[in-house]
Length: 125
Image 1: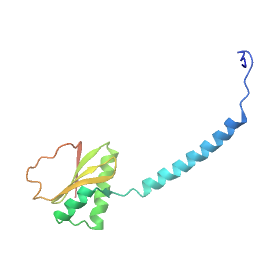
Image 2: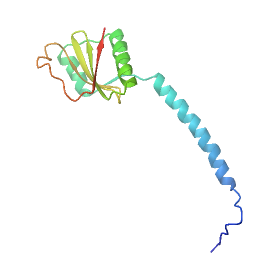
Image 3: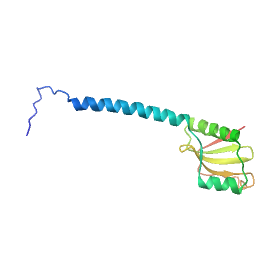
Image 4: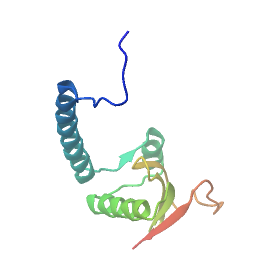
């Protein structure tokens, strides 16, 4: 067994410095991956949402998708997790944390006028 005396300074080992260099490289890789992910942050649609869009005949143009993404970004900036996004006669429930549209509704399917399990609402123009 090796004894360690408290009055003797310990010299750093070389392997630790090599590990630090590797972790710094890993941090820069992570940073670039994160920045790239943020730039290409696209809204996803759940299987359920795709079914609802199709069954309710809701067609989203590229401009509508862009506005929906902006609404989700605004909700995310405010700390929202589950949001109702109102867009004209349509509404979308969105998981803001996952950038995923959970379901889509048109004015006919919003007859109960009650939406639960959301923490925010965004009204798009």
